[in-house]
Length: 501
Image 1: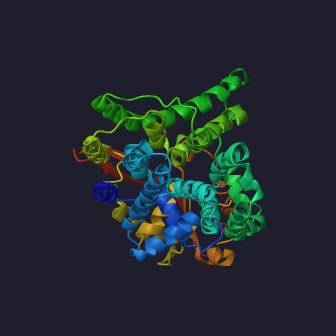
Image 2: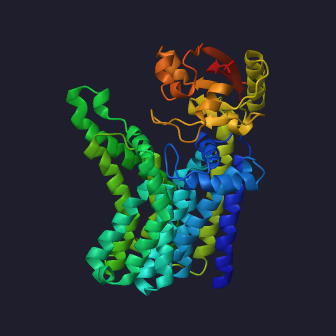
Image 3: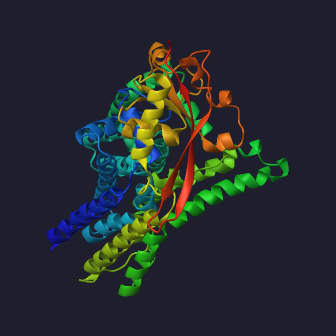
């Protein structure tokens, strides 16, 4: 019977992954984050202009493996989700029965970050981390409990990969550190932890050297992502910013896990035997679950109060994997013979409702990626470029991210994306070739609407383009219409930098 349930567990993970890939295939265009990862995958680089390189490495492999089709993006995103949930289950088995461990993983599949978030963003550094964090936590705990060198080595390597996915993983390492200091100090005197540290350092060392050589400009990007409230807030409101930012962040996390909590309550009402685990026994494992499940999210939210800066809700997506484990461990329900089957039925129903709901949402909105006219837009820009440059090859495109990355994936010439480098020398572009070949520079509509000086917008590109280049602003208009014929007019602003004569 246990083997049957385990098969149901894996079948469920595959089915829900298939459904989300299927609904994602209705999109005409991938998300900006996913398209950016494709551009990073072209670089074969030890770093990017924003994040560590693992996102681009994996996408480069998958995108070429699937013949440079968007399905690679959606499949890779779901692979990360499935891997993460499998390792949530594997770790949960240390604390729960087999049935409850499976349920603690499956219940996360209806969390906001595993549904709406993955459909909207498809694939990015957060989604990779949603796969990696449970792997890292599992091998850490397995290593501590069983103290095998093989496990310590795997933990070190996966921890290094976590850093190469997103620097935010240091918050998870803090949870491990506190656990060791307060409950397992003997590990600090044994070789396993130091072997893991060595393999972790070796894993990230090439990227660390790259960071040093490039003046750490990917860290500069991270700093730029926080919007300091003092820049546009009256001084008498500044103290409230330290309260508003973390509260908003925590509310986002609560909203994200509401479907999971709701299903748990449905299960509790069915069995009518929910309780609270108040026992003082097994304190170390209780603290470990809370540290891994809640400490990173608490620290991240607190940075908003400390720095008086905005903390984006989606940054918490990597940290909520163990909410199901927390529910089943601290608010236990006694399972009857049919509880697992009852749970599975509800789970399938909610997943299908999520998928159908996202399909309806996408079809009826007038900013829909489902009806985005990418073929017409790319064809028109081919003609615009050919006319302006006497049929020169379009090799480079840069500027506003929302539009630039579309050229790499969907334009017939697949031009190279000139990544922003925040004033630093661009290490991925041949400057002379850009001067020789010219480029299309895309602009942010909001910036243009606010009459911001174009030369100020192109700061990151002036060193790559002719000094006498004429950045004549032009606009391209197109429409997106939903299934009931409601249309929304959109404008792309651009400038053609002609090839050198």
